[in-house]
Length: 417
Image 1: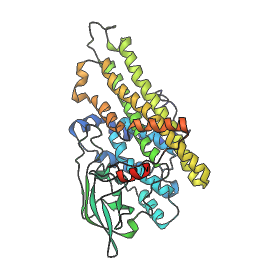
Image 2 (image 1 turned 180 degrees about the vertical axis):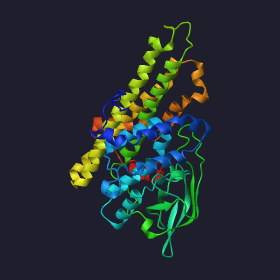
Image 3 (image 1 turned 180 degrees about the horizontal axis):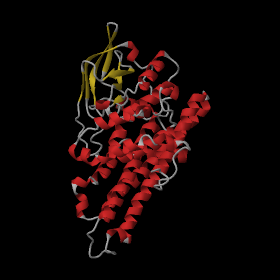
Image 4 (image 1 turned 45 degrees about the horizontal axis):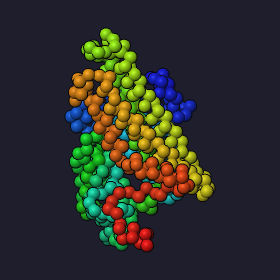
């Protein structure tokens, strides 16, 4: 079935239905066991393997580099559909998709050529940036220091999303002088340990736990030319979450519709002999579905802003780049609170159309709220609202996304002085 036939609207391009068609049977297979995986905590190694085999990891890679050549709106359109099947898997690919943008935006170099080849070979990249503890914002306790003709990596990362499913981990560290440095680390290298210890109540299967590195040997060719990310990275990583929320909304709407259609027991104060004919129950179904529709439309509209940023950087026009980057950040930030509020509300009120049996763990309806609430806790929406307000009132360009850590009070004092 197409998005249009299901009233989700047209895709982001005329060719989208053709591009999405090969993946939809895989998404359907993934969806079949989504509740079982959630209840029994079964990591989706097999499902990610299906996607790898189908070329999902190469969506943005140019065709001449063995990729599928998706635009950014087409990518996010497909991420919504994958998230409807299982948002854990979307999150597991988040770092891989971001690293692909790093490569696509990198200047011509042997490093870029090498990683275009790795990606074309369908190798998958996991995340290794966040750290726990009391490190200051913008710094890393993980160290990558010179050792003979190469480097040694030592440290520990958390929120290493997708790392258990990956061939490589892209990470940030500090060199011997404390300067930021980026590298790619083979997940199977000696001294690498990846744990499934993420204990969040949502997105439990995204492999977002701990990765430890003990005297891991890194060669020069695995260092990134720069520790900086691609120019629209802040909006991109946030929009992956919004696509996940859009998919969660669609899944919630689908599950609710099925349960209402199948329900035979009714309440004495109800309005019909079957819940499927009760106008108040149908109103709840319509509200949940409307929220999912709106969130999908918003996500795809914001994806157009990211595409403009990408194209501006390919053009080499510095003024166009600055404006496009600012607008991409703002359009995504303007979407965050609206999207999260709609889906958090929808994943709560869906129970109003059903009975107490809907709370059974075996139905898995609670997973929609748990996953949505967990995703919505990334990059708190209150700060997005403030950034948008500051732009609207004062014309302030959003500051770069600064990561997370302990505040550097020394620098703050200097800034105030």
